[in-house]
Image (tube, rainbow, N blue to C red; front, side):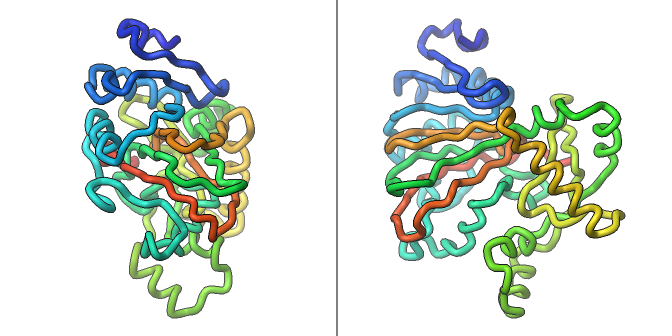
Length: 279
């Protein structure tokens, strides 16, 4: 059990992988009451992913629980954003195909979102697992000399870079539309968090390294992505309907494994407002 939570005696925790992921068993009233919110936030920062099996929150309960952990982003319907590839349910479903590739949310923002809560509503017959990689742990495990070098680098992130993985032969008109949605953003390769910890900032949006030969920078970003997504840094969640998973968007990357695009898979997401400039 995690010491910060033992005192309440209402939460039972089990680590799911060495560097990432903790399962939590708790009664609903305890979670909605918010008495363990500070401990849960601390555990989320340390473990990256919190899993609440078959919690079966209603839409209203999910939003209420999220509010105990922080302010929520005004997305979707009353704080619930439908994560689905069904265009009848989500008008930006085409863009969500980028979720099949490692990424962090809000990589083109100065203040990326703090965390997200995701509840499974309808699942695909196969595939659709969600994988999470701990970018704190990946950074810490690098040799000290390499960390010192990486600390000085800055990376250009773009919506175009992420979407080109899904649509490599995009039309010029769509390319211009993507650029209009989000202007490229330059971020440090290493996020120096106010806690004193550091994490790698990688993923599909990472286009190239500023001031480095284009291909050399691309090669470095791919190598670091492969490093950060080794099994020792990764937790893969196999969903059942009603599961709730929370991930720290400031210290993890995530992606979903392939599934049939017409499967009707539906997840409900509530997102916590970012609290820290990416610097």
